[in-house]
Image 1: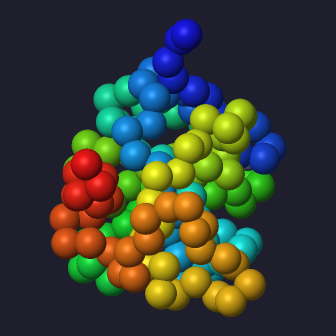
Image 2 (image 1 turned 60 degrees about the horizontal axis):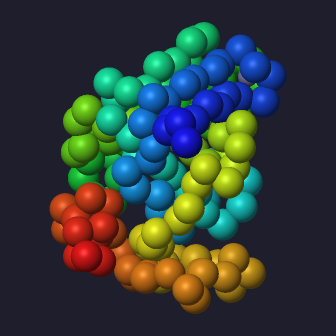
Length: 147
Ligand SMILES: [Zn+2]
Ligand SMILES: [Zn+2]
């Protein structure tokens, strides 16, 4: 089996290829994710930036997250699709959105953060560990705690 995955925006102007499999996959129900998602949460993959190659123009919207870190949400300036994010608190990592995957089955969610903010109609997956807020140390830490 080859590792890695591909994805891009709706119109195809932005494309990416990642040479490694996702290190972490998580649902995030924070307000910023909800507002930028089209539904109640975002599902993010976490990959090393060195393995993640993007072609096409990506525009970034920067905003300070509850953690205090600046999150830059990258989107296609033509079709508006969210493609991937970076987080100043986790340098060297890229966070492709599960919505941008060519094969959405690449994303195998492992846990849920900001579960306390999920709207009643966006059910928090009962089969996954769910943290009411972000853990100190971010997604990597959450995965370590899980063992
Ligand atoms: Zn596009
Ligand atoms: Zn979020």
